[in-house]
Length: 297
Image (cartoon, rainbow, N blue to C red; front, side):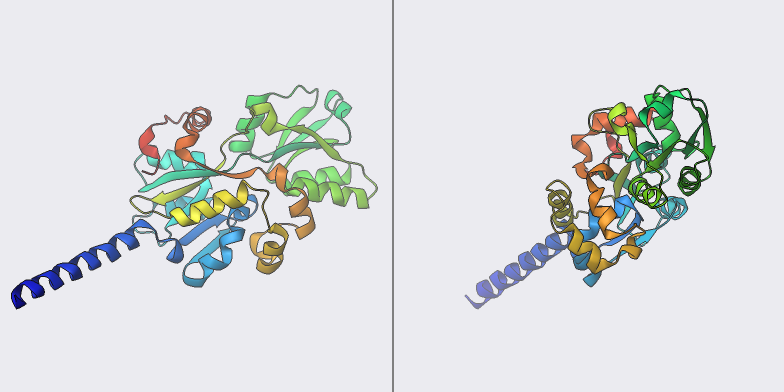
């Protein structure tokens, strides 16, 4: 009898250990390490920033060099990396990364800013940025009718400067910089407004721009559910989150401008498997062949 009881106790201990192990494998949201571009993509994480920071970390970076470097590493410290979907998908297609696409969080935030709609039909320069990258692909795809001559600058900030100095009447900017530029222009006595929405010109829901990439076989269901709820339900508490985190941490303009322009930033989480056709169509612009193995299981 004692042997039977001892045997049963051993079984119970084994099942308990298995159960604990499965729980850890199932969801690691509490200890997750995230790398994310500063700016609009960072807004997807503000509601969970405090929870993530308690046991894990989230780093915000400018530019794409570090994102690509970490995606390409065999042993990156980051469990989740947010990056332009075309960059990550290209690495997956060439078998240079173990990360897979979990979901899309931004759907484009490019706008033509100008003195008036009529300015598109005048002679002069159309200030653009992002030559050879996503912005140019979108400009070339939507083909907004204009008499202006396109000129690409090295950064959106340079386009902003040309608009504020009055050297150009129309320029392309991304939100929230677009709203910040309109506000600065008003202070200088220049009337600027949004005269074209490139996302609407591309398609009803915009285009899948920034995606969440996760290491294979890792799950963060609780985190993604929280992001889904926040970004698809009016960004409840956004102002408070921004004030608590600090707007400079996210490399965004003022809290007021960020909140005011949130709808035009198109930050909405959607699971990759639910928008695979949109991903496939977008990747075609970069000559990347989509396949379902690019997605996280």
